[in-house]
Length: 577
Image (tube, rainbow, N blue to C red; front, side, top):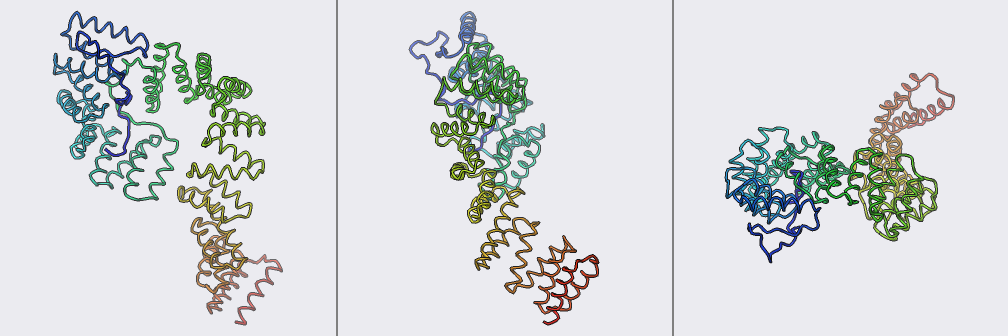
């Protein structure tokens, strides 16, 4: 099946390991095992009692069995859900929804072979429901039937050209079938239509990894940073299924996926249901607060996070986010009080120590911030944010130890171009241009379009070249200057110095070429004009050289006396040749 992962609905992917052990000692009279549900809100158990009571009175109602299956399905009791769906289908085989749900459960269990017949039947009964065809295509793909799956995805795409999941499915199949160019084209188009969605970029990354195109892979990797939106289809049957979920954790995941797919209202509605089902749960309030914070509804976020913290003072995520949100509203002192109080309850939380360090730093108490960052690192030696913040703060205070911490951070997270640029510039300022290049070159390979990085690397090349030239290492200096010009084509200082070195080493044609390029951008520059004239003279093209000098003098009437003398000196030197 490969490494592709994407969300086709808002229901939570469940593995067999999540299924609670069934009560096998005593089977229910209706032969549908009733699992232990004590970990769920009492409302779920009461709902099961109601359904089982109705079935005891009338065991021939397929709708009741279907509803029972939906309750078990949505809350992770997959084996019981299959039995209930099968009982419903036995009583009424022409109901597409129960076949669809049954097939979906088998897919959740990783049993695509058993899912296929149910989804085929559902597709036959509901041929116009594209979300049913989509699930059937997914089953085909997971079984390795890429050609058949592609046909189904294309069928959906013809009916719904904007269906992103059909396009993703097509790309996956095309990649497996070796049609990578076509897969690449449709994924690029999809990524342009949905620039904040991660799936098209992750599939492109996988495609480029398989083809060995490192440059494109790295470019896509940079674009993927910070993207967490997901693509979904309009699936009313799975939306209905979510209404039967009583599991607080699953409801929070459903809400998260709804929010990431652009349905904020549905996300809030789902979390409010979680709160109503479990009013004593700090997790439900935390997730509701987090959702509001992510959407900049800070006042609502603070209210829910405060409730979460009151219900569970050890919920460090709620405390950290509460402090962060208070700070965003300009209430930094209140944020500090919040995080300090939480640390007194949970002193070994690196998350709280990190937040404390940030707030102290923002308040200007940098020494205390350094202490907090160090405590966070003591708790978790690989805490990247704490290491980065500590390193930057120490560098800001001109403490050499800061470079060591940032160097450690880069060893943990080597693709952080911002820190690489910072380190490169710091080492360049210290005169260690070789070390600066060691940090900047890998960053440039990751982000070749980053103009700040281009210039930083070009300057490092130039300064190292000057240093090498002064030490007599002319060939290495030229190589570094060539790299500088190649990195940043508009970096005139590097091009000028490169032309000078070419001139001094007898490579006059190359010196001439760079001099002409520079003069095209700055036509009335005395130094560049002299550089061009000298490069022509060395090539025994004295008349051309003199013409260049004469033209410059006639076109620049306001020359100073010193500039005129410089021209005459060069002029006489050329005439003597």
